[in-house]
Image 1 (cartoon, helix red, strand yellow):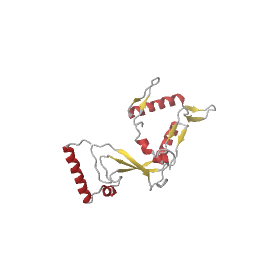
Image 2: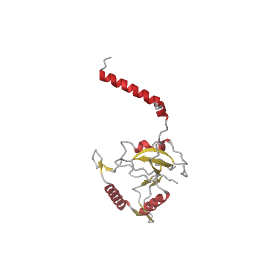
Image 3: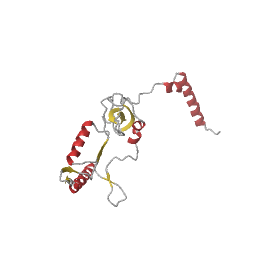
Image 4: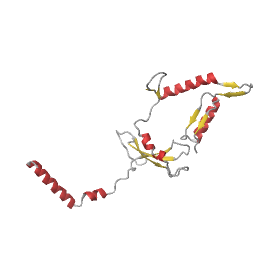
Length: 203
């Protein structure tokens, strides 16, 4: 093996330094055995309801990189918040800390590179989706609902009875909403006369 004079002195100096450190009690095994900091110590804790089914299990979601964390007093700057841990909420009255595989695996869904984060629109005949604003998306949905209701609203049936129904558009609500939000949603759609309704009822 070819070795220069400079490299020879570097190797000797490194060996002597390593031996001296080990003699002082700083051996690698000892360093690795030292207790590590709890990974959730500086994380922001948020409570959430699992969105997969109507059981509505409670979640504890932990993220880092938040501008301010009032729980731990930790402050991070020039960082982007990212979810890194999910577990069941032991104080939740429904699940008592349990999560099914889908709920426990929601971390991968949230951090997926293919997750859709913004509303998109594909025009008739087009082969691509275009990103639009939330305001434009809500306005378009409201416009289409209004046009469809005006064209298909049934005030009376064949027997002449007043029915005030709208059957050409339906709605499906998810399990993540609260009882209060579900009640308001049902009042709103019944007020419009909408009949096709699917609801993932929760607590």
